[in-house]
Length: 108
Image 1 (cartoon, one colour):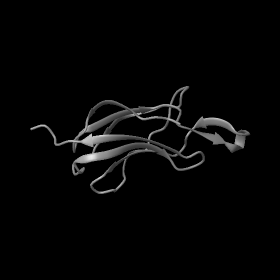
Image 2 (cartoon, helix red, strand yellow; image 1 turned 180 degrees about the vertical axis):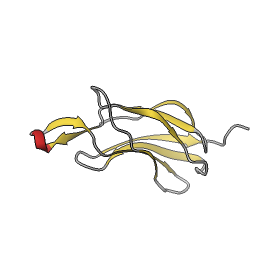
Image 3 (cartoon, rainbow, N blue to C red; image 1 turned 135 degrees about the vertical axis):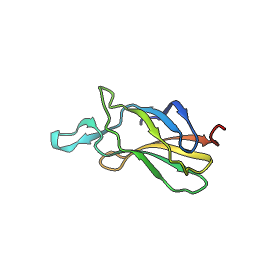
Image 4 (cartoon, rainbow, N blue to C red; image 1 turned 120 degrees about the vertical axis):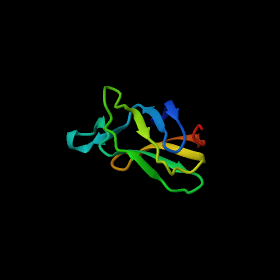
């Protein structure tokens, strides 16, 4: 199961979250069950205050380790407080790699 690793980030409304997750894959039934990069990946954030899952991006895993990596913009109206950052797949072998984070007020 992949894990989400936080990279350089500004975890506040209008900020940026950097993350990386390796081995985001699915089983390809067309080729006899071999593994390949997942085809339906989302990066989401779900603030505890609202419970609403917000899609930040739909990246494509790359490289030998099928890595999802990048910096993704956070919404300007993102609720403050605890939230769950996730890399998910919805087809084939479902992946739900999550990381608890705290969204703080932007610097003044």
